[in-house]
Image 1 (tube, helix red, strand yellow):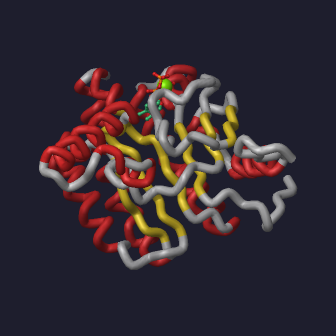
Image 2: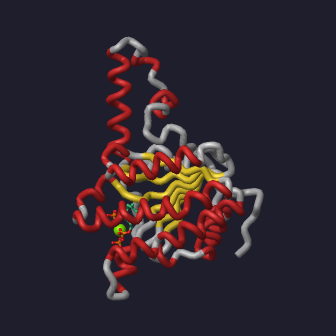
Length: 238
Ligand code: IPE
Ligand code: IPE
Ligand code: MG
């Protein structure tokens, strides 16, 4: 698969979907699918780093996923803690900075603690920023930004006439993330499921039927190749 090193997306965001179906197709438990989903993350980090991607944002748990069974939710956060414990040393030595975005106060305490420690440990790394979107939903994020801006207006910090896009953006949970260049969704569905609505404004979208645990380097290179075939106009003419 040929990928041009001069046109690598700065920010790749991924909706890692299909873990449950992958497990069900094998007569396994949904949690086995989530566990198997850690391997593509390892591959992706290596490959994205090698290609020069600077921001990688993974939709790991949505606001709406809280409606799943307690068993599945507990299992997912248990796996997250295991993943962070086993991978932080590797992230640290390979130049990856780990961060998280979302309504993080809702996370179980052990998950939040593991995340905070890993964030602190890798905070000096600058090659690649890996952001896990956890308890994340764009509408909740936009509403939270509106609430904090409204409070600041009431305090007299801003005149509403001066509420620019940039000021709004600076109040988002994910304010430090740049615009998404390439969105990949695995698992066959063609929707964005309340992910990064602000940042996706001009993203190129790549959908694949591959279920997340089966997502390999070839699939990633195919997505990069697809991105490179697009003509991005941002509303202008050629
Ligand atoms: C994505 O896989 C992972 C999370 C949403 C946490 P799913 O669990 O949604 O898998 P499917 O879509 O049921 O196959
Ligand atoms: C999106 O997948 C959320 C994550 C991948 C974490 P879902 O499986 O929750 O999305 P829907 O329900 O198919 O839209
Ligand atoms: Mg799903």
